[in-house]
Length: 362
Ligand code: PMV
Image (tube, rainbow, N blue to C red; front, side, top):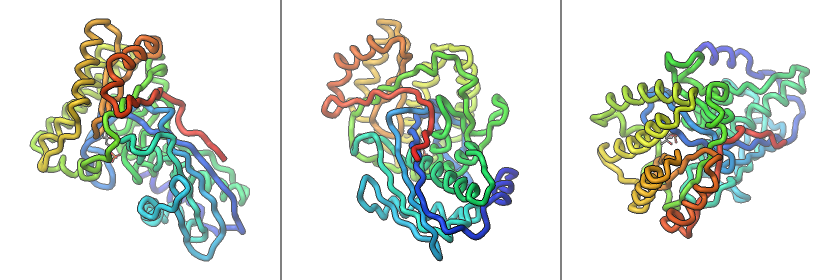
């Protein structure tokens, strides 16, 4: 609330000068280790979540702006006008115009593209919404600068508005790892924005790789909006939130000390719990496929046999994220080619890794 009031007071409210130009940002997707599943109020999480920020899976967004008499907006995705996706961003802007009143004097043309292939089943809302919000804040900075008032890019503000656009996007604006949700175990944490964990993790986690094994390219059978809503009637909801709390506390400690056994245990348990929650909601959903299960079993067998500290996580879909430290990259690559690729669509997987967060393009 305090931050909200500060940002409302600071909003650029004056007459927009005769103004045109471009801004552009690239933002990565992120993969949660402790999952956000269930929300309350205005996009607030029922439990805290922790994620790795990725590198390769990202969205690039450019906004061309021009002074106008009233708010104007068009949205292009990968070169084609896309009113459905544009409508979400337009709604977000209109809902938050008290913070960005200058939009009422601008025409915005937004162009966006994803680095990951179409129909790879990878959710893009975290990267696309955070990339758009970074552009919006960059635009605000340009306006302020044009009036001789330079302002810094405020990542907390970027995270706050990314959260309002799409919950998990709140975590995409920070390098390496982020925590979203208030917990007594981490000073400065908040339900309203994510915070960076970069300085509180063992160096091994900064080298982590994420091989995304594409089991199906189909779009999700349940939107995350519907999935979050189903937690309201889920009989296991309160046990889940208590367990997530416990997992956050233990994972934060393991991330700090480099305790890989605890990291693996919590990460895999969280992935399975997310799917278990979907399976016991009403209506229920089974989003994993037979090949997902085969991959999970292969990963556990390989770990038992070789003692290589690799593990899996899942998003709300059938694709598997295989997580491992860079030092094991050669052996794991061989394992993927020999044992896992055949379970993937066209033997397809994406070699991603923990990254440095958003990049300014223009
Ligand atoms: O950000 P949303 O509303 O799409 O929800 C994301 C939910 C999960 O991806 C399943 C988990 C998470 O924490 O990212």
